[in-house]
Image 1 (cartoon, rainbow, N blue to C red):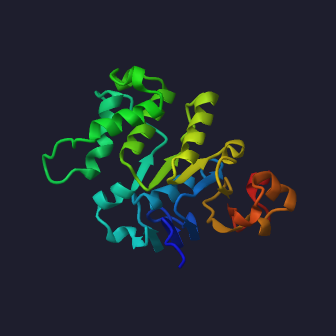
Image 2: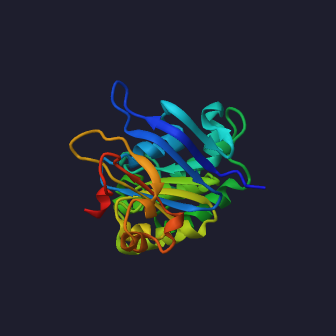
Length: 262
């Protein structure tokens, strides 16, 4: 029996209201426990693709399936118990501490209005803070932390959700090289399905699959998917992934080569 993938997009199209489709005919299947990196330059549509996966925006056409269910037939708390999200930009004016922010990750698991923390919640929060090297600053005001420290707080909050899938938009932004490598190693060791956008292919090699994205800077180009071996020469495929048959690439269909090679 073929296992149901944790995340599956089938013939998905999306574009801004009144505009052209930026994503066109996207089909991606991410099995349980796989780490997938979506790579490409700014403006290529990486974040737009992630927003479909974590139910922020609905596709114009096609379906987004989460654990075999249409994500738009699920209630938001159900989705939040399965998918955790870490975005690029974080507010700096939270009047909360890292411990309090991490604790917000338990909200999807609470039952009913006014339900307080469960018996395990404090332990789960402490473990996530320790895993992200945040114990020493757990009770400092969030606004006093550096950009990298704030990013690690948000990853800790995502871990506290205990999701099956974690979606991260440029998770290495603001991190020094040590914490970049530690975070990527952590993501690989979680045993979760991980989908992350990256613009640096030298960091993307941590993933089991990569999805480079190319886009023309002078217009809103649609993007499509296909095996990298069909769109790039063997040397390029070998540099990106030693198993090119397992790699997916997203390119501008109006170009005859992936923009990422330029």
